Amino acid sequence: MSPHKRELLAQLAALPHDVFSVAGRIDARRYLAREFPKQLPLVLSVQSYPGYRRLVGENWMHWHDYYELWVATEGGGEFRSGTHTFGFAPGDVVLVDPLKIHGVVRMEKAHAPLVVFFRAEAVAPGGGGVDLGFLSAWDRRPEKIAPRLDADAAATASVHGALLRLAQAWFAPVSADGRQLALRFHLLEVLLQLRRAFIAQDGAPEPMSLRAEREARLGRVLEFLAQRCAGSIAQPEVARVAGMSTSRFRAFFKETTGWGFGDYLRDLRLERAARLLRETRESVAEVAHQTGFSDQSHLQRLFKTKHAISPLAYRKQHQA
Image (cartoon, rainbow, N blue to C red; front, side, top):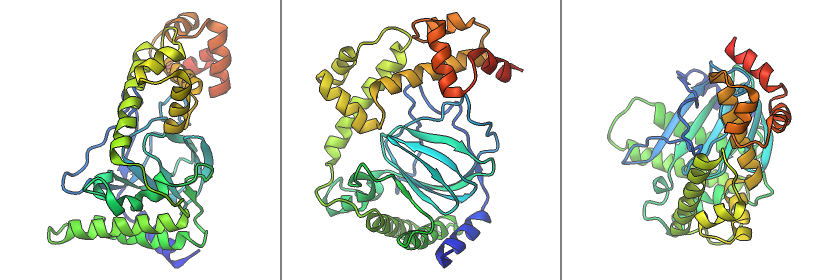
């Protein structure tokens, strides 16, 4: 174990943990909103999840338009972000791409990470120029590379050291003089080390205007799906909402969220079905009808594939 890793984990373990749950915080589009300070849109938090219960039925898969990275301080598990699913252990550093649908698939009960959230404006206040290069670990990382750094990889030691200095600046007693400058400096240091660790591709980053356009298209599409997912939905109809041809929309959705359109729609319907099973006494056939499945057997087959139990067994487990 490197000295930086040992010191980072020891100091984070001593900090008070913020109890966090996504339940009730994710809107119908699966968007997770977050408040940021106006002067410097940056938030650090050491989180814990005491309400964890296998995550079955909880809508943990979500997305947001800000940047996120986290390092596990204790406990391990499995995480999905876009097309990548991977395990994590204490000291591993994970990046969460803006607009990618992501969430914890499995985690140990004692899991507690340091989470860093920030908007692009914290890095590139003017919306462009060389400052956008600090975001290369996200925006220019080759798609085939999973967004995870192994805790004991050679390049991770420098990232741990930079994260330690950022955390010390954030959790230190607040003094107005110079604190914002120190936080931005250490954030940029973390991002520079991440850029080096992920060997980001050369090339110009995506302009902020194009990123905003992608966010707007995705927001319209997910809002439409949230309202209409109980009925029949044709892909060309959704493509028109995005203002694209069907083939271009299919590629856009996969590239932006990391999910195939059909996979996302099926998972959204299964999440709605799980909620109805937990909260109502409607028959399984009626739940299938209300959530867009062709019939009861269709729902039962897909539900058991995802949750490893039947809809009725799931209801019994959660209504007991």
